[in-house]
Length: 512
Image: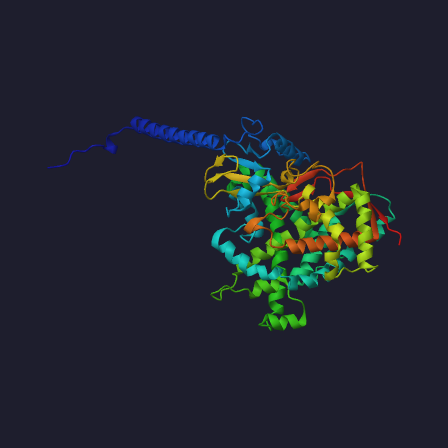
């Protein structure tokens, strides 16, 4: 017996086929709309315990990130209204909890949640999947392999090299003083910190301060700007759309320059190490550097870093080792210019410690006590990395009982945390004595976290602090700084804290 035909496609005419297709498309559309609606309801419910500023019907709060120099202060104002944290929406489906209180920061930083992919995936084309982006076991493996690169025995020779690079910059400034015009310092400092990281971490003489080749620095500026812009413009989250966009073309061009720079450094070092098989032999010829540690690093199974991992870590530290430090030093100089009484007190301390020398020694760093207090106060007000993002690997309940589910995005805003009025009295006042031992005792451990905190704190923070001390000491020994009151810097977040219009200061030669 022949089985009955339940559905014979051939028996349907064209009109019936169109009706069936229309019904199917309608069902799929309804299914999609329903899922989108339910997802939106889930997000609203999840973040409802954390109210925030009013949202636009289309952009959410994305339109508030104007990059015109007002963003950071707007965030600080919201932090005053919502003391622990507040929700901001990037469009309809990307809410994030902006954390601005140390108690909430402690709850997040004491965990090991992964970096927020919505933010950090966009830096992968630049720095690859290195220590900044990695999560889980691979991050732990890389952290363990790279930690020896920041041992104090490795850092000691860097102090002399940093002094040399700073003095090159100061010689250039000597020629600018006679103009009696304000000087934009961020660019000069960026070249100096690039020169420093190249000499210290990679034993590479770039001569970037003297040969006029600013190609790499310009590429980094371009990448930072375009990456921050891509995060804020949602159509650009699509790789397909971004690839064919003008900004995508600009980014690929800048990335090519940055990666060629990195590959040149690695290639040159590999060629020079072909005859040397052990770190001890290298150390007899010169100081060990970060790239030596990278190339010779082995895990417990004797496995080293792949070529891809190697380039990712070099790109990461090329960026982290010069751009964040350039931001820190530039804003420190701005603070010194704004507060001449503290500038002079630091200068007197530097003179006493250095005794007229134009080179800082390792032993000098611990004697620059008041200078260190000023550096910390500057970093409280102007953290080089103003915020970091996490994606919750599991639910969390904060100290006040409010909760967020797994998968929620949180942004730790270090700029706002450094101005938290419940931790810092008169937070806008510049007062280095906040960091004296007696005043620091008992203060919230997560109230000052310019290098983050917990297991994922900045692995290079000692290197950065040493470089900032050296640079500030040598600068104040030779120059007096004063602000350009007609061109105040406009703070903007572009991976690091920058100024839209640069940081312009007057330089005056200090009389000896």
